Image 1 (cartoon, one colour):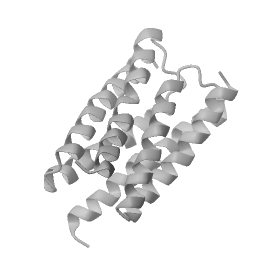
Image 2 (spheres, rainbow over the protein chains, first blue to last red):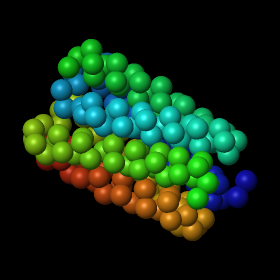
Image 3 (cartoon, each protein chain N blue to C red):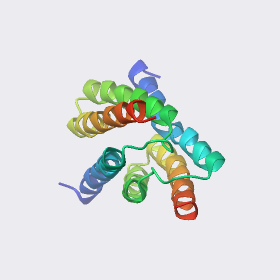
Length: 84
Length: 84
């Protein structure tokens, strides 16, 4: 695999797993007052559209990265609404 | 422009501007206790790598989206460190 595609995969992994410590923090502290609900709602719309884009272009990297981030964002939305 | 590329542009716009309300909230409330520092650090590394990927592939959309998100993430890192 060309180096630049490995860089792309690492980039996608970073921008996806980045949300794990945020979900963990919200779960542990049961507090999301400083978290913007609007951010996670707009992000969710964007991720759905990226999924559509990835499915059309049959890009497994785009589909996988956005599906996983989407699940983490749904978790944050759930925690935000629960602990607001 | 094909519809799917317009969807891609709207997707990129959403996942970029999503951070604006979060920066605004952190600026207004001067509180970032619930925000994960690790999330924004890992996100920043990912965005830098996406920039490298975009520059290599000469993709203006990838470069622009990640540069703007990068600036917003730097702002969040600054606010997180300042108001922790």
